[in-house]
Length: 426
Image 1 (cartoon, rainbow, N blue to C red):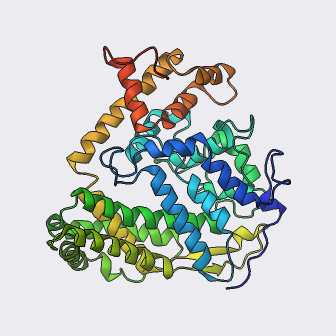
Image 2: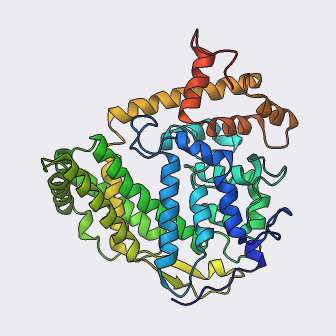
Image 3: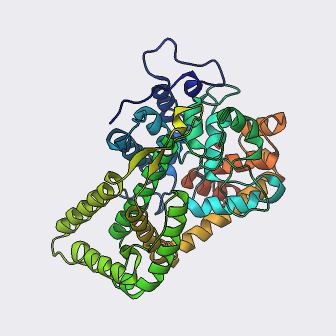
C-alpha cells in the first residue's frame, strides 16, 4: 500500500482555538478523546441497538455497537488495499460518534421523533443530531461544542443536503447548521459527496449491524429458521430492493442479481443456520458456531473492499479516493438486513415495545412543548436564551439525549401517581 498523503491544516482545522499545540497527540487522537469523554457518548450505554436495553446482559447497546464499529473501521483503515492509507484515529473518531445523536428506543424512536418535528419545525434525524451534539450541545466549549476538526465533522455528515419538508425520511442536515456545513465543505467542488473516511465508517457500521443483529436475535431465540425457509421468497424480494439501493449508493453497475439474494440461496442459508445454531446437542457448540459464523462473515465483508482513486482535483485529500465495495458484499448485507427486518423487527414481541416507546416520546414531547418548566433547569435556560434554536428543537434535543430508562422514569414521574421523589434527579 502506498504511503498516506498528509492531512494538511485544512483537514485539521477547528472552528475555535482549542487545538492541541501543546500535546504530542495528533488532532484526530484529540478528537477521539473528546468524543469518548463526552456525556452523549456515555449515554449510549443506555440506548437500544436492536433488543431492549436491560433485557439481558449479552445483547448490544448503542455503546457496544459504536465500539465494535470503531474497531471494524480501524481494522479496515489498516488493511484495505489501495493507493491511500486513511488515518485510523480519524476513522475511529467518526465511528465512535456515528450514533451519538440516536434517541431512545432504537430506529423507531428516531422515526417517531421525526414525525413530531416534521414540517416547519425542521425535522429530526439521528445523523444530523450527531453534528448538532458535537458542534453545539456538548458543553466543553461554549460556542463550539467539542470543537472537533473539520475532517471529523465532515465524516459525520452522511447526508449533506439540507432539510426539505417536502422530502420524506430523515436523511438530511438541519437547516440551522447551514453555516457550519458551509465551513465543513469549504472549497469542495462536490459538497454532496462523502470523504473516504466517512465511507469507511459507514461500511463498518453496515457490517456491524447486518452481522451482529443476526447474532443477537439468534441468541435471543427470535429468529425462526423454519419461518426463514417458508418466507424465503419474501426475504428475497426485500433483499433485492436493498441490494439495488446499495449498489446505487456505492456507484456500482448492476448487470445481474447475485445468487445469494435468490429464494433458493436464502433457504440454503436458513438450513445452514439451523444446522450450526440449533442442531448441536451441546449449547456451547451452538455458541462457538455462532461466533465462528460472525467472524467469518465480517471477514468476508471486509477483506474484499479496496480504496480507489477518484481522479479528481478536490482541495482535500479526503475526497481524492472512494471505497469500492464488491457486489457480493452488498448482496450479503442486504440478505441479512432483510431477514432481520421481516422476521424479527416486525414481530409483535418487538413492535409492541416500539409502540410503548412511541407513546412515551409523544407524551413527553407534547408536555414539554406546552410546559417547558417541567424540563431540567439547564434546558429551561437554553429555551429562554433563544440562542440554540426554537423551543421545539430544544425539546427534541432533550428527548433525543435520554436513555431508554431515563425516558421511562421521566414519563412515570409525570404521569404515574405515586411515582417520583423530591430526592431524584431530573
